[in-house]
Each structure stands twice: as structure tokens, then as C-alpha cells.
Image 1 (tube, rainbow, N blue to C red):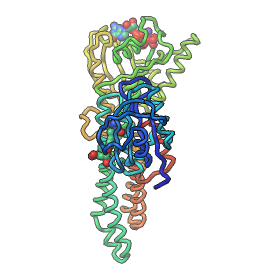
Image 2: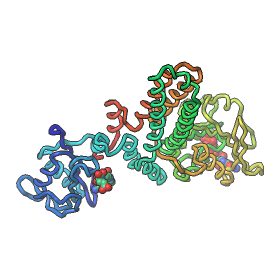
Image 3: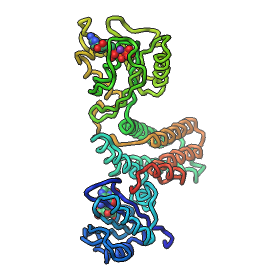
Image 4: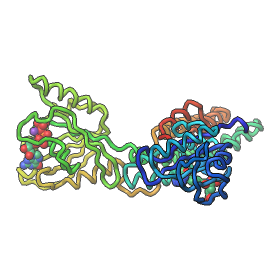
Length: 446
Ligand SMILES: Nc1nc2c(c(=O)[nH]1)N(C=O)[C@@H](CNc1ccc(C(=O)N[C@@H](CCC(=O)O)C(=O)O)cc1)CN2
Ligand SMILES: Nc1nc2c(ncn2[C@@H]2O[C@H](COP(=O)(O)OP(=O)(O)OP(=O)(O)O)[C@@H](O)[C@H]2O)c(=O)[nH]1
Ligand SMILES: [K+]
């Protein structure tokens, strides 16, 4: 244990603040507490102290907090020096801790230590960062759920289910003469089916959580002058985009980050798609097409007076969902409505009068999977979805082996691979590389 380094960092944001905190974690924390504040404060008790430099000179007066290991955020001895939030004060306090043997913490290193000491699993550690970075109140609530262990518990019960199955199958392997009975035992198939259903359910919830974390990228496309910029302005409640009756007004790509009931959406307005000789507009059209490739959803706007432009529909990249927006219904006296069939969705609205915009907002929530409340949704990342998907593929493979009577060894092997994939989510199975990638994206002092 002697080679564990003590780390220190300013935990509060840089700049001026009412209070600023220097946080220290590791075996030197008690010694640093004594040196800076005169004596070790009682555990977990806010203690008023003078913070002094090496010559016993004044650095600050503040509150010292000492958490003896393992009862701290990191699971190590932790000291907090809560001083006045000035950059020079914080610098002097930090420098003093470094001079006393601590080293500067890397970004995310406090949380990484909490993970390595078993205080948090990997999804919870990621949720700490997601909580801090949340841009909506809903995001905070859902990251909170993951931090409190909701997601981890779902993964744990999946893993437990697989362990139970494997124990059963491996026991059968030890008694080869009874293998036939094992293969005929329908409870194995039933348990496996149940694990697959559970995985799909977690995957579905995690997917919604991931959309909530990262938001939807919605690209507005269509011919010139159909009302694309007006739609961006209406959705974002700004006048970010220039609206004129002149076709070809928008040349550049415009983005607005909005939220609908907590769902973050990046709305992208693009130049009207048309063949043109104007080199500036032509570049705009080229950029518009590039945006389409990154979209989660395309709103293809057309003028209700003119009808959709078939050549545009064909020009859209395949595989990206499209909602057709039949705009300017005020000019033809039509009512707002949404029509949905297997092959397409079309919303009739008027950006000018606002009629039908609510239909569009609701539809965007439906697309994000937020239409039936957020119960059971927790913040998740692409990494988790990848692992869940890989696990699911292994389980489906196990199901095929079982149905094909290919022997319990293969089934057990696939179950183990699925378990390993799920273990990557909570961090039971990890690589240095993965940890490095996750924690280095945290802010300093976290
Ligand atoms: N001043 C301060 N505020 C903070 C933090 C901090 O480090 N310092 N946090 C830092 O992220 C967050 C709170 N997270 C924390 C998590 C666990 C423990 C802790 O002492 N855990 C002990 C005891 C738990 C208990 O009493 O039930 C433990 O887990 O053993 C402290 C803070 C947000 N606010
Ligand atoms: N009557 C009516 N006019 C609208 C409606 N929506 C937009 N307009 C008008 O249509 C014209 C074009 O609107 P824009 O939002 O600039 O259209 P755009 O598709 O972004 O145009 P480009 O920049 O040329 O691609 C403007 O004069 C708008 O005021 C609507 O619902 N009803
Ligand atoms: K225009």
C-alpha cells in the first residue's frame, strides 16, 4: 500500500467563486491536514481552521474536512480544504499540498480511484460525469438513477441469470451419460429465452437513455423557400436563421440546441436543395447533403401549395428516417394533422401560424422513445449499447446451439462470452485502455 500516491486538485471550477475547494486523496492526506491546518480535524466534521504556508504564514481561513479511509468518496483518506474561491488562494493551497508530497491529479482520477476501490462500478463512475455534464433537469434525474445503481442492478440480475444457467449446464457436462436428459430439459431453453427477453428490455431502456444523453440530431431539408429556416426558428424559439421570401437565403449550415420536455435535440437547418449556378449556394447545398449523413432524423419540408418534390425524396441517404413536413397549410385552408403509415410519416402544419407544431414536438418525443414516460430509463452510453448487443448475439447463438442439439459445451461457452460482455459494462471485466479513455474525459478535480 505504501506506493499509493497522494493526489490533489482544485475541485471547484476555475475563476472567482464564493468558496473554492482543494481536494486531496491518499495516504498523505492526514499529514497534509496537520501541516496546513495545525491538527487533524475530527473525522467527517466541518472544522474552522487557518490554512498556513511552510513559513506559518497566512494562506486563507476556511473549513477543513477529513474523511478517513474507507469512508470517503474515493475510499482513501480524503482531505478537503474549503477556502475562499479566488484563483490565487486556490493555487497557493494546491501548491502547498504538492510541496507536502501530493501530486497533481489527472482528470477523473478521484472518480477512477473510487472505481478501483469498489466505491462505484464503471457505469456509476460514468454517471458522475453525465450528471455534471447534464444540460437538462431530466438528464440530471436519469444520471442520478444510474449513479444510484439502477442500471448496475439490471446488469447484475442479467449476469446472475446467466451464472445460474451455466452452473446447471456445466453440472450436466460432468455427467455425460445424462447429457441427453439435459438437452431434453426444456427449463434450460426457457431460462435462456427469459435471459434474452431481459437483455432486449435492458437494451431498449439503455437505448432510450443514450438518446437522452446524446440527444437527437434532426436535420431540416427541402427545396428553397419552403420554410426550413422558419421551422428552425419556431422550434428553437429564436430568430437565429434569416427568413426572407427570397429562395436560396440559407447558404450555410445553422445549428440550434433545443430541448423538448428534457429531450436534447440539435436542430440543423440547411440550404435549400436545388441545382444552382451560384458557387456560394452550391457549396451550401453540398454541405446540406453532408449533414444528412449524420442525421438521426430528417424533416423533409415542402410547400403544401406545391406538393412534395419527388427528386428530393430520392436524393436522401437511405436508412435515415424521414418525416415529411407539409408546411404552409394556412395558405390552402387545411387543418394540422399527422398521417402515419408503414412507409411514411407526414405532418401538416403551418410554421407561420404555429398550427401543428405541437404535433411535430410530440412526434419527436415519440421518435426518441419518450412518449410513454421515463420510468425505468437511466442514462446510458454507446459503449453500454455495444456491450449489450454483443451479449445478446452470444445468447442468440447459445439458443441456436441448444435448438440444434450441438452439445452443452458450446452453449456454456456462448453464455460465458455473453457474461463477459455484460461484465464490461459494470467494469468487472475491463482493460487499462478502456479505463483510460473513460476517465480522461472527466474534468480536472473530479
Ligand atoms: N464537499 C464535497 N461535496 C461533494 C463531494 C465531495 O467530494 N466533497 N462529492 C464528490 O463527488 C459529491 C458527493 N459524493 C460523495 C460520495 C460519497 C461520500 C462518502 O463520504 N462516502 C462514504 C460514507 C457514506 C455514508 O456515510 O453513508 C462511503 O462511501 O463510505 C462523500 C461524498 C458531491 N458533493
Ligand atoms: N404563409 C406561410 N408562409 C410561410 C410559412 N413558413 C414560412 N413561410 C414564408 O416562406 C418564406 C421562406 O421561408 P424560409 O424559412 O426562409 O424558407 P427556407 O426553406 O429556409 O428558404 P431557403 O433559405 O431559400 O432554403 C418566408 O417568406 C416565410 O415567411 C407558413 O407556414 N405559411
Ligand atoms: K428563403
